[in-house]
Image (cartoon, rainbow, N blue to C red; front, side):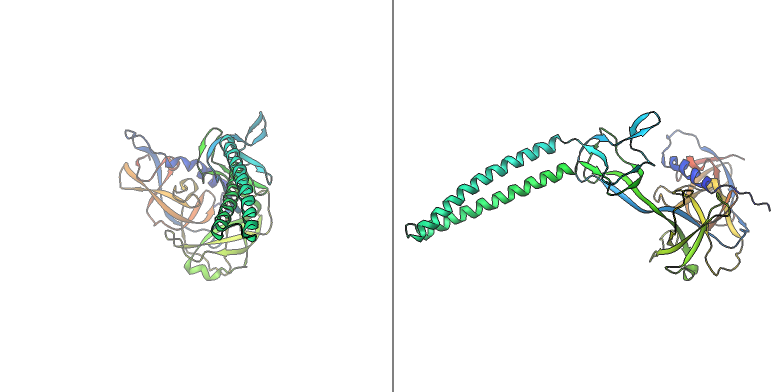
Length: 373
């Protein structure tokens, strides 16, 4: 069979389009027309391989610690002039990515300063009274009871002054937290706010990524886990770039299997950053010491979607029932090797099931479909 080299990046484009699958159709919408294809056992050449997802070395969620209205989003220079910060932009360490309105926080600082001034004045007065009481007690011109009362007033005034200082510091910190800053030079993966929107404490403002290095993440079934060792060197390849291999070292192995796919997630830290690598790119690798494979299940690349409950996972829509009118059921799968416009399925499907190929990106779990031949 002639092997057609279809760029693996096509799968990333298919998955990007599949974000629409979570939208609910109107109640009176007719069944969505789709095409289906049976899952068949296919000989995948070159030995068993595993699909690996390219991810950043580190993802940094940046959330607001205080609430308020967003007054400003960092501006970047675009082809048509300044534009708000968006996905794919790089930001420097300390850059202010978003700003909340400061007026309410500035008022709280003014109030805290006034309360501190009042507390300090009361503290000074209490200190003078305490000093005078100490001298009178020494000269036996004041009773011990009156002295203790002056001392208590002095200590209480000191405590109120300390509390006022702490409240002022808290107000100043809250004002500083109205500015959402990048902790380092990072890449913007997601922007979660718009200018003018109201945010609460804990609202995600931006999802940033450290792309100074990449990691390839793949799943290994229990039977092959013994072939993976921390520190082992492996190579990942991509059909988009024939003949190119990226070496990496196994940096982490999940201690527990995924409860749905029953595979163990393995992270491979790549030795160098290649500008040809892209986040989300699907690569593949082979484990050392593997025997020749038995025929593997395969489906078209166009049938792969991202499950809404796991944006990092993979799934297909299985056409349940028979005849023209059926129901689409979302089925989580574990990917295997790619070959041309097909990709192997390591787990999640059985031979003979029919998966949606054309129209998969428009579906949701349980949706009515009409099979078009």
